[in-house]
Image (cartoon, rainbow, N blue to C red; front, side, top):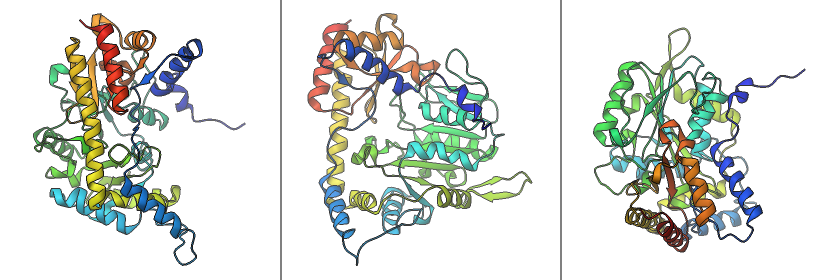
Length: 411
């Protein structure tokens, strides 16, 4: 008889966002006319930038002609896109990243899980708490953890708390860890990391031959010029860090799917025989085997992000969502709630009022004001007593949702 990967049986009953959907669906079945506003999942609402649309339409036309039709593209991504990414996202910021070190993909969520394919099962893995659930669940699936505990944590993982007490800045673990997940601007708290913060982590990783998985999916929302957009702005990072980026939140590609992962050629880890192996070669082999690349049409759309028109349109999109975040912050603050984030990130991290648990506050908002957010406890035990509000929605919905919350929960 065929057997399964038993690690999947260690996963909790439901991934956070499907559980949110389940509760919302149950409520709407009983209240089909409820005017629900969803500020939970970080999905964009505004149309694709015009420059991207024009580029993709032209690419579709090219695919309709024998002379310009394209079949399989390079698994790593077309050179013309990777060169623009390297030049404008990294080299202009002083990062020594070459186009050959960039791998175009269909999503940073996918890549942060798939990257585990090239690492062994004996690594000690560190994650922040709270944390983007994908980092944890993919390690469970890969067999890198023990069983789950009642508080949602898993044996075998090292959890690094981030909270108001430490200004949402993760501290270096007391023990040696091998793989480290860092996400800045942070999902879910909206916190950012200074160059000094990241330098400490890079120094630790180099001293301990650790690898940092740096998720920079929200870097476009950084407004403070002193905050780094890339881990590679930190000296020494090319020797210890892999960076993940996405076109989802800055250019609205959540449904279009395009992202990238940077694997520097200087990055080496030990094999079982203690020899050093280049990670670039392993990731390239993995992608060439398991991935056929992002479509030509989508990559042309992503390339347009770097055109002059595209950059202006992206700026307008990012500023639109940042203005939404500002409205959320100001309205919830005026209601007497404690709020964090939402300045250099599209997420606002809210302390639940009246001692309510994260899920109780979720139910209160859903049932009483028909607003959906994300319970902080779904991001880890340190998220209990907090709630994430996403700025990704229409201006009208954000203003209406804040009006409802302000009227109901004003302290």
